[in-house]
Length: 112
Length: 513
Image 1 (tube, rainbow over the protein chains, first blue to last red):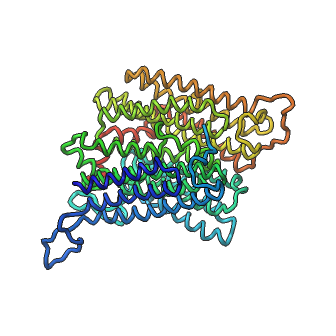
Image 2: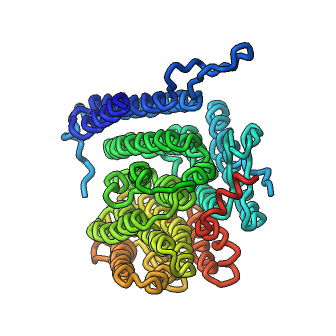
Image 3: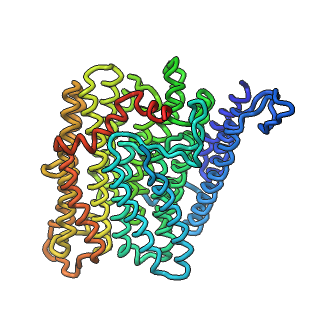
């Protein structure tokens, strides 16, 4: 059970970083921390104590297998996470070129 | 019944997006016609499916993975009464936005990227609406979200980049909350198919087990739908995007990936409980009231329209919430059906008139070069078509008969009164009056108020493709009010209400197949 709590704490650490950091790069890193806590959680769900990879062996059928579906989900989610991070980084680099700063307090054209 | 066209809703725009970008490198005129052709095809098949679909669901299993011992494996695409309406909405507003973009986007560079991302966004939204599998919803949601982040930033100036940063950070946080919730759902149900999850959950249902999942999902999709405590990104993103994209975002995206999924999951996946319905109704009523008060002080046309989107979505959420409360109490199911019908009807209407208003705002920006209401005035003389169509849209959104907004608001208010939610009914009326006031301000400052010495004779009407889409949407605004008629209402709106109202129909139709 502890490992699930640690996973949830990692999610909250990421959320805390997104809320409190002022530097755009650090916000992006915090988002990645949140992302990886989700992946970790998905991978943990599929884990079975003493399980092996789910390749059915007819010679020795009484093995415990880990659940392969969450692993497939994690792979998909990692690809999506890569796309979001790349997109976010592209926007942050553009912002740095226009505003000349990574400080979120100085990026405040839009109000109201 | 099996509808063979279902996979085309996702496959055609996806293929269109990639072909556009490859062929666009060689021939510059191809992207726009390609996007037009894709959207025209989608509009055709979505209306055909709506007409022939009837009130049954049609299921397509990707890869032909048949259920094993009654447990669905593999990915399901499901076309039923509710998703059929959303598909029509997406392809209609999408088609008109592309027609509009043919002239509007000519002043931007790299048009082929624009049309490619546009098709990708359409593919994502169609996928979300059709998907019967909760992880698949997440995947398609991200496809549409990432392409909309890029489209909001399409101008790559200071404002656009700032808007897209806000949109992206909040959108990514929302996505992770959804992913976390999906993890919890898989943990407790060991399946991802929505219908199957329902079957698993309804055996020995205890809502307190699922409260965390429900809150995570409501927060995640609430952020995507910009319901009031989660609305901060919407006015920036929707006002900074190019106008046809604003029309798509406000008109369709927040409905398809936000409101639609909330409604679908809370009716067809969870059992409707009173506590959660009260939370949803409260959020809806809050968005309705706060959104309109934030809107009334705005001078930037597109910001004003964006805040009105929050307020009008509040009507939808509140109305559906009223239906949920009545269903949870198990009383007056005909009033609950009326409330849900009103909500869905208002969602369709909002797509038509808010899409039109954003296209009007784009036309004004195109001709006058500003979005500030204080710098306009007397445009009615130079831009008669824009003026007339925006008047139609303004009357629609403020609920003046015979336009569509009147009928859906009437249904919502009548349902609220019949369900004895007198305060909410009063609130809906007051918000509608303030909306009218705010749009009278828009009309007066933009089109009529001519200060002496400031008369501008150099204002010209916009090109034909832009006029064409604005006129079509104005006609759609008028035609949609026909859906309030008894005969049409039963054939178009009732299948959607039935699939939501009948608690077990959705899951039994899909798992029983």
